[in-house]
Length: 547
Image (cartoon, rainbow, N blue to C red):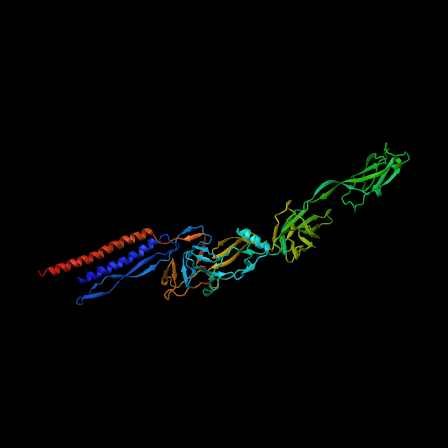
């Protein structure tokens, strides 16, 4: 009968332990990143009531709470407006550093920037990770200082941070080298000077025919008077001067005398490009002061629109210029090759030419492949030289000629030209984003991005061995093992979880399950207390038997 007392008391203590666990789970139902615990129980010890039977007759002395098992199941996500709020989707922990330099591990990614620009959690602990090795401090010029202040809505900012070589990647480092992450707003990207530009795409080589009047040299025109006293004018057109001239075209001669009286007559070119007017009287004009004021050839000529290739050019002082290549078709075309003359220069933001023009030629073969380019670089009046790649001239062995600018003779329009250049404008900090691999990505006003640092993702051999430290943090123990980073067989960092920016992981505690557990343990508590009262009644009855 006395063992009933012990069983009842142990049962009450055991169920109270379970109730405490469930009550704690319920209390943290809205705690970001919280992981619920489940109570584990075990029996205590037994005494043998009899050893005479084949199977021992034993009675137990109740149960006890043996452990509380933390269940690290994934929690659902909720949207957050915090700039640095981030959730883990998968296995692993964030690392934070307390004021006592004690490292803690958490699933709560509610982070923010403190007054010193460091990344901290809700309790002021510093978030751990690896900073970009190219992240460094710099002093600003007066111009940049003023612009930075305007960008941040403050006074002039004389110094800040920059990232050299924004495209260079870096590894997360070892667990022992993780440090406090810094996420300042006074970030500045100096301009990268443009030194190379390339163009790729097709040009429209279509020409059009238009009627034009070409002025002739009047000194080469003969004026004679025939036997009837009428005027006859004659001359010839040099094909070297006017390539388009051909038989049947009109020459218009404009006569004038000293009194300003004018008259015009026409002549027709023969096959040898000679012409002679009919004999005319030119009545009303003073014969003594008569002369040819002007002469024009009415002919048809080929023409083509100029092609303009442009690329942005960034200068060391933060300004932006425009490199402009103007291609003019050389007409009339001689032979099968298509030729363009090039006029290239650098223009400022006002559209004004800075410095002089550079000239050259482009030649394409009958199939549209580039075969010659005499202008491959242009001086930048703001400093340095800009190399310009329009393609590699034709070499059948390497398949060149169409790798840059070419002529598509099957198209009457310009294909979209692809322009590539190095360099970029100066950039001021705009905002931070968090990528799937935990990179803290700074966005800049020039459209560039740079990784400032990377969040560390810790794992443990035995998560159950971690000790709860309050504030939704865990501490390593000898049972959990040291925090580790996981790498694949190639030595690359293995992300056992992805980072989800703009989200927080909700508690994984299930309210309905915890309420059910409370009901079950409450009933077990009541039943254990019944064991005590029943044993008490039995003892009272035994005592009263003497009477």
